[in-house]
Image 1 (spheres, one colour):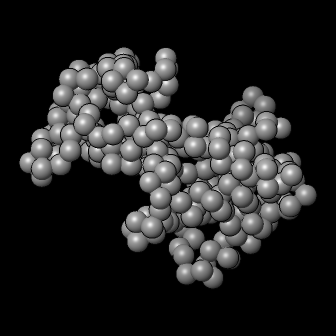
Image 2: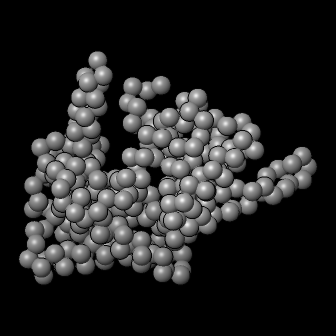
Image 3: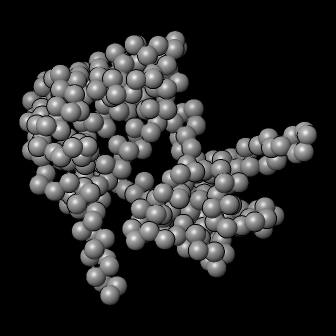
Length: 277
């Protein structure tokens, strides 16, 4: 198992995450079954039933968190339909809590989904109590999730040149600067992620760019890379103009944090390891 336990947890559970047509994340019960180590569906289905009861007892709607999603599979020379579930993050959390802890990935899932579900539920009051580095980590997660949805939608709208598409958004928001220009201005090393080197305020502007572009691309009826790319640029430009009208600081004028989020995460992992020794 990799030394970076948090990264390992994220990789195995994020690797089977999907997004529906509205950009909502979900997990397939059949895929989660395999990841958790259950060989037989009937045994895993019993866990799902227990989780649905827990969901109902918490006054949550079962159909929302455990959406029935039939799946077509090969059966010899023919095919057949089997039951599957479109699970929300909360449903996955309930499942791993009710699953057999003898399976190694169940324990990993309990930690992962507990932490991630909590992150999704953070309130504005709780957010304001976070340190600047904690705010950066929280908003960086939002940009990662948002970009996954954005690129999926962009691909559906005909985008193939994702470098050009991405830079269009940055150019609009950063007064003509591309991702490489931003990296050079920040004094970053080759291939170092610019989003990992932004303050919470700068990440916030980019989250707004991502979500607003998502919304507009959803409305785009024709499959056109040029139109989608122009939309990304115009959204970035509009957000820049809004910041200017409000008297805010332009993104390129915001200070670059002394430490990247990668460095902060490494420090946190090292501190945890020291405590365990």
